Length: 224
Image (tube, rainbow, N blue to C red; front, side, top):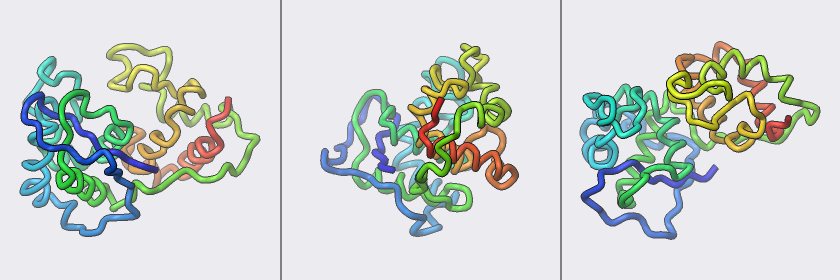
């Protein structure tokens, strides 16, 4: 999967962004484990990337409207919080929804962020993992509906709105195959990197059958 890396930033302070030709690829693994440590976060990633580009909204001492829509759980001034959200951070920059306004980080800053996200991911799992070929073209949503109902739809249901979604984006409804099809690779990134299901960090290890069911369904294109 290809990942472009724009980040949420302040409305002022505009460093020179990367060239239009620059493209970032998900790499096959962490190249230097030191770049996923708390020391590297404190000394390099936080001051060079997260502080100037993210912490206007994503900071633990900001509340309510001062977060400008940033989820309460997603802060980039704390290593544990930033590390727990590497999948979400990667996904947002990959789908080019961040930053919503302003300039982009420089090439060097992008590279710093990319290395941190790759190395800080629990167990150094790689974002290069992709969905495979469909193994069973007879799959339907009914085959996996119980998994989504048990693992996802307490937040990702079309019947929920507002605060009842617990931060799940509007339209990200996993009781609707069409919505799943539009987010298949992103959804698998969340599951594979243990960001989702939320509050179930050991989902892959503890529930391999459910994880495989999701993987197979997504690999087959999330049919109706």
